[in-house]
Length: 250
Length: 319
Image (tube, rainbow over all chains, first blue to last red; front, side):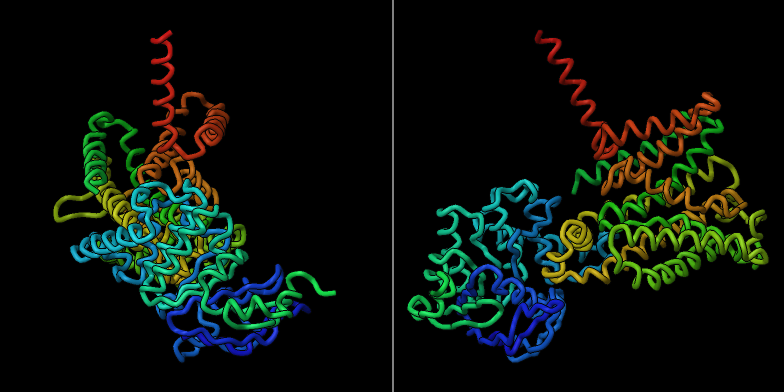
């Protein structure tokens, strides 16, 4: 599904990522963990086309996607969420999801401004589809609220609804549980399971170990820009190197 | 949606009856300028208020529209109805070509780049004397005409200009609440998230920049054909700043706000004429007060003010 091979990123004299390789299977939930500064978010930013890589290759379903910008990746079925929630704060909750449906519409500037019959029909279709995703994430009642006024937890759900509206084949979530209370985190775990049920592959960077061990099929551990270990949650929990990296070695 | 249409129809009625209040007066001529400035302010608002991209060079696009229309008709003898769309196309192409490199810039850098663009255009108007007449201007531009009806009086120009201005307002209102309009507003709030959602931000910025320039050019053509004379002084840096002020005072991201801003900044100097030398002081003071107390612009500030007054009235009644 997603294959990362030999990804290296050097910022000035600092090697943020050093020859990272792993493969993610179709329909799996994979966690990327590691201590602070391990390079998790940098890796996400490179995979999703926000940063450029120094060397290495990323491929999605056999197709080389390294270096493609995020707007191209969206059309190829890859979408992500952000650690600090990047909502369109001045727009309504429903409108946020409708932006997620951008690639599902085709009306251009003129058709929209002149309110052509087909643009009105398209608008209706997008509005309906957006409602469906709000329902899926359980925030339908907030549809007309301004996104900037949402609580952190609801904002996170909206961000996921908006990402799902792109109808991705793979979704990358950067610390989805950060800032959530335990009940919201539990809801998130269920939501991830639902997303997988739809056939969407999930990758997450996460600090909440309980969540990671609970929902992930496989885990990739990064430390100081290198891949330290890879395996099932059980294997990772028993890996002495991983324990040393987290607890500090003697 | 229906509410938007109703709002627009009310606005149309307001515009249609407005001349009755100023019957034959000199202010009618000022209302023609309100129409032209509304087009310009709405155009800039599409860029600044919707997409969040600044331009300090819009007077330049306005000027090119005016000069191209003027030169093609007065010097080359074209029909004004052909000159106008031709000028708009040329300006659109120019804006797209310039927009591609400079819209990569953000914030202050984009402001500087567009500022430079505006100044270069202004210099060209002044220096290409053979073509534009230089600082002394270009005269003898014909009025627009529809058959035997020549748009050569204030009242005729009023309805001519406002037909275009209302079309632009409707165009912009429609755009706001559509797939492309949402993408523009998304770019304003979070460019990176918009890209992740599949919005081609770079192309979209260029599109809206070109659209904004095309509308400005049309306003310029109308200006040239109603005034029958153009000179570089109308298209300088000061006017770009004035347009920006209209958009901000009126309310960023609001089409009707742009109208309010344009109306206020066009009418105010005329109304303050009685104050003679102090007019500029009062003008500056008023703008300052408005920015301080209505940061959301007139379009959000005025309803807020009314609610406040109503609230005070109720409070007094209870006491």
